[in-house]
Every structure is written in structure tokens, then in C-alpha cells.
Image (tube, rainbow, N blue to C red; front, side, top):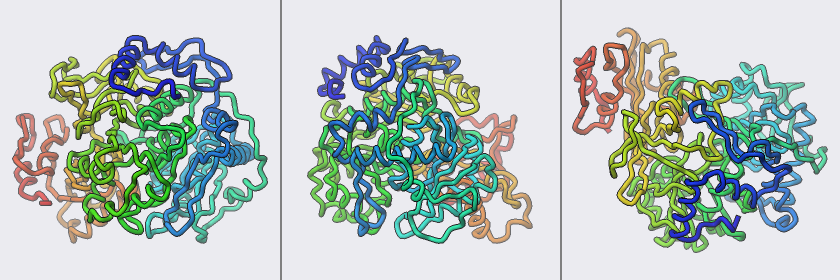
Length: 637
């Protein structure tokens, strides 16, 4: 990929102009010169924005694992592909060369085939952050199966919902996982999910924690004995450019999560190109992204992007506070990490601790630091830049989504001057526009609107699994002819983009997209609850936290309020996962609604945030008297 490294601001502007004037030629050249294909394409791109139909590299044939692994074997076979850093620092780290990665992936691919998995079948993966998670993803891609990774922090109900939506045939899980001082009973959660998931025929279990688990005869199999018996080579399935690669679920503004569908060739080209440029990766670098592979960040920038570039990528099982708040910095020094990519939530939590935790580590190997998951606030930006980057490492504040497949807006290190709280400039081939509510493009600097894109890029999701109309309605209807991100943004006088937050009913908490509707649905299942509304309020660690306004059915069911709060949060934890629990729950007798019955959430947001309570126009409120009651009962910080 070195011929496509952007190395100066002048070169960036030259490449960018060329890429948006002739995007097909731009992406076609990158794809042609930097990847292995069984067969080249007839056309670089066909698309219809109104119908949300995109075909990149039409009729090309390839296998993404040939590009992630096989093509590196001749020159990089003995180079480390993966470094696994366990949860417990006393457990030795494990490394896997590209030769070893090839063997592990081929063996697991053969196991999946022996268990009846065919091209196009869905395989659900519910694992902790261990090497087998990466092997599983790549093994699926090797044989043309569609992988659906479910984050290991999700509940049985959330897992079951995702298995059922994708009708997964096989589940890969483990006996358990480690998270700091805790051991998570993943198999127990999986067993509970499978009570309501009839499509799963086989469960392959990784032994990680050695704890006692239930193994259902005829369905559950320990993975390692199967791996030991499997052949160590595998002929990669020939895939069409637009064959599905994976489904990854993200929260929507309605109750049902959206299974974003990504396909093979475009995703490959885009993640490889963005990884190379945004992290300034060179051959001997050690790259570490702290995300979970259960999220898109882990798919694109722990597994696919790095391996497509022949990189060494770190997989970290632990958390930043275990066993001490120095863990991140110890790992950087231990493995001589050169690129470090993490979330603002982690930075804010570490910045609250004594600065000595970071100061005792030199971290001289670092050359690029990055931020992902949500906009990084200025205070956290400066702490990260000063104490981790030593004021010499460029800080790339990256903006992108599950739906985009890869990074769309970011500084390029040693090229783009950085500016706190600004994601900076679009990547080559990316055409952002900011729209007002009347569907007009905003040209004025520093005026916020809805962030949209008026031309597709190779990594764009192709659909929502099983519901293309929902894909059209969610992303391509509000601003016809454009992709609507759901985020607000503004542009400064030099063209830098600043993300101002969500403009729909999705809240970002600790970097996780959480739809308010599924949380409200969980709360409303409680026998005492008549109705609820969830909004976000600023939180110094999480960025945003959740504030719940809950209407109780009748006075006799109030009981003890603290117990009721605990029951509500337990219900949310059981239905969705602990990440969705509410920080504040206020019991109210009603919610502010318009005459059409719609909850006026901006009033609730203003109350949750506190301050001057500028509610705007409230003339359409059916029950204006409720606002004062809710204000009076507001739970203070």
C-alpha cells in the first residue's frame, strides 16, 4: 500500500481533489495495485442512492483471507500477525506469526465445514477478546460463511435476538471470559439464549476459564479436540465482490437492532486504505486498538485493516484499570506499541486518576495516538495529547460508524494539523455535506446541521439484514440522494468538521450506540411501569449517561423507590446488558407530550442536563403543567 501513503498536506489536497472528481478511477487504481484477485471487475461502481443499491467492483472474484494472510506468507510468514495480551498480566502474552495464523484459520475453517457450515450460512460468534475470536472471523470468511459477532457483554436476550434475526446455524462461544477481577459465565448466558434460538444446530466451545459448564449432548462440542484433528490447509472459497462478509448489529431508534450487512471487496479495499493512512503504519510497527472485536472498530481496525496491510496487531483481553490504572501504559511499553487507538471514555476515566500512573512510563515507541467511538472533549484531548502522546504524537480523532465500515473523517498523522474536538478533514473519496432541516446544504461556517454524504464509498453497508426498506428509510429518505449519518456536525473556516452529537433517538454512552426505544421497552415490561422516556445527559467519564423518566401505573405499586430503581435497572441488564443501565431514574406522573401524543424529548433533555431550561416552543404541548412538576423533581448530579 506504500504507493498510496499520503505524506504531505499538499499531496492530500491533490489526491482528495482527484478522488472526488473521479472517484471510480481513484478507487479502481487502489484496488488494482494493492490486492490479490482471482478475477478483476467489469465496473468499479454502479449505484442508486434513492434505492440504496451499491455495487463496487462488479463481478470481481476474491477471498479476503487470501489478502489478509496468504499473500503475506512468502515475505512475512515469520512476522508476528497477532500479539495476545491476556487479562491477567502474570499470564504470558502469546504471539502468532502469519504462518501460524494461516494454520489456525485453516484448521478452524475445516472444522466449520465438517460441522456442515456452507457458503452463505450464518455463524454467530459470542467470545471474549481472545485469539479464537479473530480466528473465527477469518475462518468464516475463508469458507464464505457470514460471521455475526455479538459483544460478550450482551445479555442472553440480546444474544438470542441477534441469533434469530440472522438465523445463525452455528454458535461459537467459550466456557467463560475474564474481565478484570471478574469471570463472566458466557456459556451459561449462551445456554439461556439458545432456549429461544432454534436455528442453532451446533455450539463450538472454546476452553478459556476451565470453569464447570453444561454441555448439551449432540449440540455442544469442545473446539480444541476438533482443531487438533483438522487438516492444516484449506482452499479459500472464491467469493464475488458483493457476497456478504458479515452482519454486525447496531442499535436503532426503534426496538429492533439493525443488522448492518457488509460485503467483501469494497469493505476490504476501504479498511485497508484507511488503516494504512490514518495510522501511518510501517512494516516494523506494533499497532494496538483497545476496542472489542464485538464492535465495528474491532472488525475493521483490529482484524481486517491491520492484517490486510501485513501489520502486527495486539488483541487485549483486559480493561484499563486492572490490576492498576497503569495497565494501558505497561502494555504499550511491554510490546513497544507504535500506534495506540482507544476511546474517549477510557481516556476520561484514566485522566481522573493520579498522573503518576502514566508518567512512570516513557512510551517512546509511540508515534501515533487515536480516538474512536464518540467525539473527544477538549479536556480529555489535551490530557491524552500531553501525557500519552508527549505532545509529539499526532492525535487522530476519527469519525465513522458501523454503517460506514471504516473511517470517513480524520486527521492524517504528520500531514493534517490537529485541532482539539475537531475530527478534521474527510478522507480521499469521501464527500460530506451538512444539511439543514429544509434539506438545503449549509455553506456557512460554524453553523450546525445534519451530517450527510452525497456519494458512496467502498466500505458503505449494503443493507440491513432481511429488511432493505428499513435501510432506505433510516439512511436515505430524510435527505433524498444522500446518506444521512444521524449525527450533527459543523464546519469551521478552514473546512474542519466537528461532530456535535446524535440528532436522532440513539445515544452514545461510553462509545456504545444505544437506542432509546429498546431500553424503554425493557422498562415498560415492569409491572409497576406505565410508560417511560430515556434521554442522555453529560457525564464526565462516559461522555453521556442515561436519565430515565418513569411513569408508575398506580400509587400502590410505588413501594420503595430505591428498590424499584434497582428492579428497573436489573430488567434492562437482563434484556440488553449492563452497558444500558440508567444512571438516574426519576418517577413522574406524566410525560410532556404534543397533541398528537409524541413525547417532547427536548424538554426532558433540557431538564436532565440542568442549567437554564430553554425549552423552545412549547405551544404544541398537551400538558404544559407536567413540565414544572418534572423540573421540581429533577435528580441533581
